[in-house]
Image 1 (cartoon, one colour):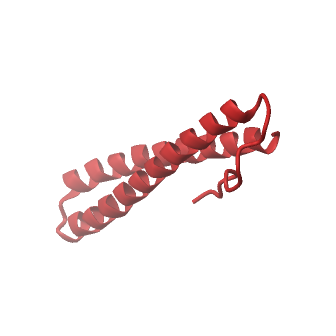
Image 2 (tube, one colour; image 1 turned 90 degrees about the horizontal axis):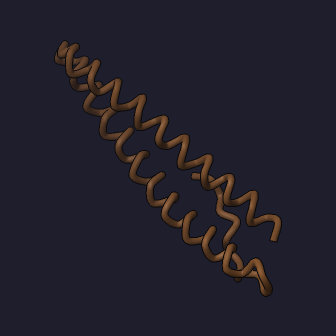
Length: 90
């Protein structure tokens, strides 16, 4: 989980609204990160079971899901990092 730059209070002045918007976005992104992590974990367990059962069609399908989930997780992490970088400027 990437660290959040929004532990403190919002700065005073013109940046306050933008800072709050970034903090709210990060909260949503962090929720999404948890979701994708859980999806990857569940699909990994299902993939192992499919391989053990020699169900290669299901294994291929699950592997495809895991690749998409991994890409989604990466995008959410990048979004949090971008928000953190912008917030550091306040």
